[in-house]
Length: 204
Figure 1: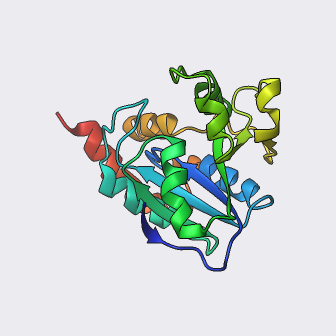
Figure 2: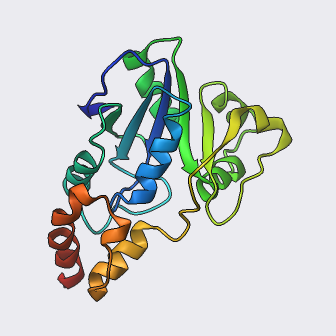
């Protein structure tokens, strides 16, 4: 785990927020802000590779620059990792935060379903993972109801509103069309979006 910015303080409850951040949106920041009511620090983690998607379009450096600009709160850390799975990230973070720290991964309903329903090839893998970390799940196009056996490790994250209409995909579409994308993006990175994403749109 490589840190580009570390939050202040000595946190015990750490919320880990992995994502492709292509680009960061107001929904990402709203999710992080909601998690601050339950945790002491948010770590935005940009993986160098993804287990479920390709790293295409704006590259790692561009996304990292946007993330550093968007996640400016002193309670936010920004890091990258070579591992794409939550369990890998938790293991990498443990030496930085100590043996007693709690890790809570932030995700939406769709990501929670992938994690719980994924075929790990061994029925003991998922229970072992939930001994290492828990999930804080934001409703996204519907509320997530976890399986009974994992309910203690998966908690809903209460949001101010449903952000299902806000996505990085929609931002990229609006930039390409010349539409109104500003309402979906933190104002601190408005100036960087057109250069990065229009260049990608016009690339052969």
